[in-house]
Amino acid sequence: QLVESGGGLVQAGGSLRLSCAASGRTFSSYSMGWFRQAPGKEREFVAAIRWSSSTTYYADSVKGRFTISRDNAKNTVYLQMNSLKPEDTAVYYCAASQYGGSSYLSRPESYNFWGQGTQVTVSS
Image 1 (tube, rainbow, N blue to C red):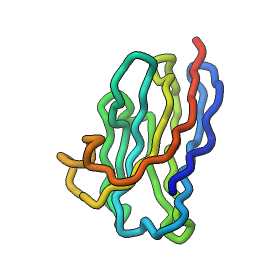
Image 2: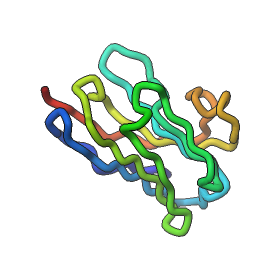
Image 3: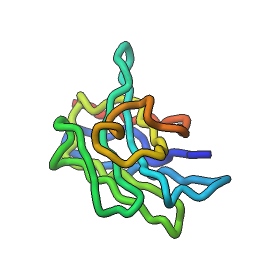
Image 4: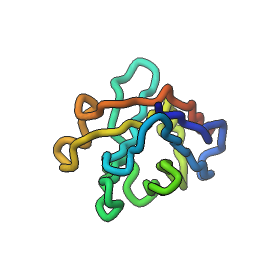
């Protein structure tokens, strides 16, 4: 089970830190990803991190503003979001994948487990 937290309402330019806590199994050998979905839009890739934490991937729209990290000892993955923009408004989901390559980790269908999502709203 994956449970996201840390969402909320923030002004443009502000920051939020999302957390995704895993339970029921150990996800240390899984790659972890963050996706988001805005109303009326498809779910889109945000960021991913391989199990070893040495390799990260980002969507171009968030590169330089968001940072993904993980603490395998705590079975938790984080998404630090800085310089937030109104277009970042969406429900954010974390997910776990048994794949490790960048071509796979940007695709929702590559993920085996999903959280319920947390709402992030950025006001202008």
